[in-house]
Image: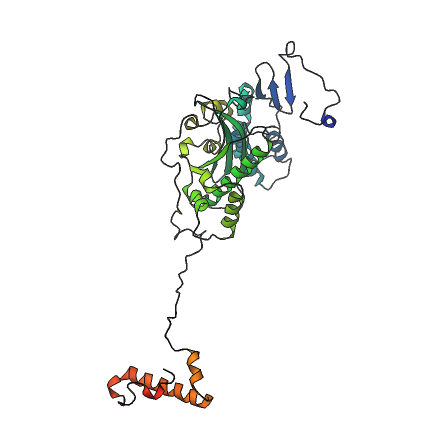
Length: 372
């Protein structure tokens, strides 16, 4: 509590006796902290709402998840909400019946959140006892959503790595249609924004930050130093490079990318069956992939509409010893200079057409010796 200004303390603030209050439960909106098990869990209201735009919005917005523990669940609800919002109906008018089953399936799956318990500490060891502290951020995108998820990787004195979930952000894709590479690039920008937020807020010194994506097109964009992009991609790459360096970005296989799990809209009952909360297994061991340290090139730059076409230019160099204006000083008047140049042009044309037909007195261009 000493970390917070006294004016921000609640008026009824009291000390907790952890010897006698182990069964107390601290609540913040829908997020609960169980003091006995030191875990977070969710309380979801069981009140039924009418199948209207107002009722659906009320249920979707009732879930309080600031750290994104269940973002792969809530993003599915938001996708359903946006699909239902496309119907031209009033806020309290019944929505189409053919969409009701899809909504109720997601709505009733929320009851399984009550059995989900998430450990409050990041890992089993304290960050103060670790010899290496690394922030690992993964990103992915689909035609419906983009996501970025961050993990803390701690390495202890014997080289063992411990990985813990920190935070996740997920967004629905813009209504304006974008290509998949653009969406993957938006996910990479979201990963940078997430890393920037965590680095500024977390009370842990981070030794390094590594970004992972399963899009080689995006990696080619980030590593590129030779080609120019059109405005949209150029601005996104500028945002990424403002906070990160290309060598911080690595390739990860799709089946090892935890951000890809958010694209599949997993139900609450199956969250613990995925690598969402514990993180991918390869983070706990030295990365054995062949992509680490690789410099990624642009993928099919000649066919990519985001890249400016390559333009070739020719550079002409004038060698010394050619005709130049410095020879004009040998003439005493403008009239004699123009006559000599005209005569020289005439002789050159004759020589070009038929060298043998030229008068013998002109074959050596002696009459224009001053200018030559």
